[in-house]
Each structure stands twice: as C-alpha cells, then as structure tokens.
Image 1 (cartoon, one colour):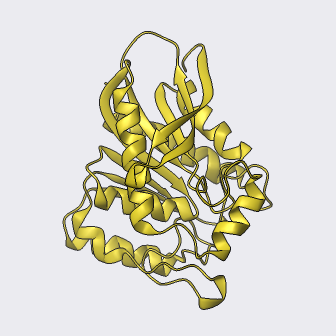
Image 2 (image 1 turned 120 degrees about the horizontal axis):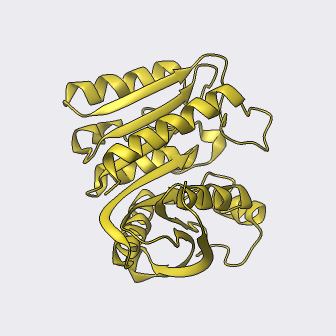
Length: 247
C-alpha cells in the first residue's frame, strides 16, 4: 500500500476534443506509477466509483474516472444523470473510446507516469473496458461482469448498442474477466462465448467465474455484494495489474 494520496476533480479532453469532468487520484510517494482508467457503471459517476478510484491510488496507481455523462447532464446528481443518458440510448461506443483515449493520454502526461496504462470497468463499464482494449493500444484491461459483449441488450432496456465480441481479434493487451455464475448479464454461457472468441484469436486472457455470485458482486452498497467473490476478485486485480502495469 502507498502512503498519502491526492484526489480531486479535474477536466480532460475527451472525444472530439470535448472538455469533460473527471475524478483523479494519485499517490504522493516518489516513483513512477502505472495508470488506470476507471470506467464507471451504468448508475453513473458516483461516490462508490470515486472510492474505487482512490483505492487504485492507494495501491500505487495513477487513477482517473472520466464522467461519461458530462455532456448530457453536467453537474447533475449521478442518478439523474444516469436516467438522462439511459433515456438517450446510453453512451455511444465511438464516444466512449474517445473519452478513454483522452483519459489515457492525461494519465501518461503526469510527471509520475511510467507510460503504462490500462482500464477497468464494472457492469456497462466492463463492456466498455473490453471495447477500449480492442480499440486502443493499452497495457492491461479488466472486465468486471460486462454485459452485452456477445449479445445485444433487450429492446426494453433502450440502449442503442450492439454486440462487440467480433472485436476480440483486435484486443491489444492482456484481459482479466471477473464474473458471477448467477449473473444473466452476462450469463456464464455468454462469457464462455467470449472466451471461445479470445482463444480462437490467440489472445492473452484470464477469466474467473464465482459460484454463488450474481451481478455487481463488488458493489458494497448493493444487495448482490458477495464478500468472498469480491475479496478474491480484488486479489486477482492487484496481481494482474502488478504484472502488466507496474514499473
């Protein structure tokens, strides 16, 4: 663990050069650190996600979480912003990639960067972490129960996104996937399909599915929080990022 850290709201240049809000946390220790872009879940740029961002800094990473809802709902509470964006069909894939690219560039520009960067995302952010890793040159990516990678969302959800499993051949970095056996978005069958695609294209990846765990098992404030799965998941994340992002 690192000693002191700093956390603050800042701005970065995202897709199309748009200036968007982001939450930055970084260690104050001397040294060079890898960067982690934390991609927030569908409920938005909330306190739980900011806590996760600080956790990465406490473990020795430069961490930033871009507010993907900055354009539609600047300054709005997370639940209001999430409802606004969901009603509009969600975050467009192209824009997401541009925003993550801007976040990666920002992290690499920091004085203590070791020039390595990766992504992690939860729920919709898990899908987007995989998308970013297939669209940008990254050093590592973590997908925590990312839904709608291999199938399109049901029409009633209203998201204007489609499957992205066909991008597996473009995966630019090692991938860690953490899933729940009781989850339906994605289901174990869907994660197996993604695993098959990654294997077909010779990609480096590690998948772990937890028995008895459902969707959002990392979320301490939600009913699906699973202590054992979350604890093991965090251990796997630290080991994985330590191999691929540490100096």
